[in-house]
Each structure stands twice: as structure tokens, then as C-alpha cells.
Length: 190
Image (cartoon, rainbow, N blue to C red; front, side):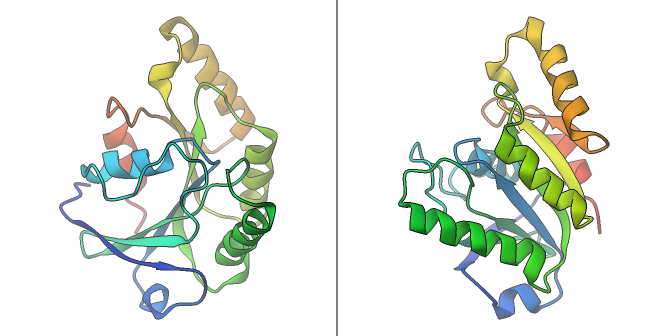
């Protein structure tokens, strides 16, 4: 797949007609500070489509982007640590759970982004198990592989693959644009 167009449509916090028009949805989620926005920007080859920040917790709504006029990329808020009040974190968690497990919206694919250097955290495993329980179609993106020592990369990726089981792991570096074509080929799900 080649992404020829990517435009921000709107931010939503609940039921919205834009998500009910029948276009497939690919959801992007990961812990705060794993580089989710950077992954999105590298995929669409636009520097500022998704807002990046050194401030964990910047994304606080479902940001909807129209890709190639044929599907939506839905950028969800990060979970876990964020520099926002606990009440807001709880609300974000409820909104994300609603989108994935309580709404009638069907995600063609969930792009689950982790930090390759850190590996899967307890929070990551919890989220992944819930996706598994609900039968979601998931691909795991191990972002920031450029931060892992070359001598350690194969071992670290093997450890991640072991922890995620049968889910496909895509080694990725948003900064160096490594893994872009592999992830785009995984997104050909409709």
C-alpha cells in the first residue's frame, strides 16, 4: 500500500456519525510516550499530521484521519503514565474501552505500539490480553528499534515475540523510517 493522502478529519470523544459511515477503521494505541504520533507521521510521510509532544498524555480524544479517501486511521490516547490528573486518565481509559469493547465500531486492525527498548510492560500485557479476549485483529509495532544496541536487537525482538505469542511483531523506527513498508503491508486488511 502507498499512502497518497492523509488528512485530519476531527477529534471525537464518543459516538459520532463520522465513525458510522462504513469506512474501515485502523486504530493506533500504545502507552504514553512510545512514539505513537511519530509512527503515524512516518507512515503517512507528513511531519505534523499527528501532533507529537514530549509531554506524555497530549492526545486526549480519538483523533480521526482519512487515509487515501478509503479508510480511517483512529489515533487513541496513550495509556499508563501521563502528566495529566488521575480523573482525566480514568476518563481516557473509559473512552478507549468504550471504543474498542463497548461501541458498535469494528476495527479492521489494531496497531499496538510498544517501546522496543523497554519491551512489554504489565500495562501493555493487560491491554493485549483484553484485545485477545475480544478477538481483535492486532499487529504489534516495536517502535524505537534504533535505540536498542544492534547486538541486543535480535534477542530483544525474540523476547517481545515470545511475550505476544501469535501476534505479528513489526520492528520499527519512526525516527529512521525503518519498518514503514512492513507496517503498511500489515494494514492491507480490507
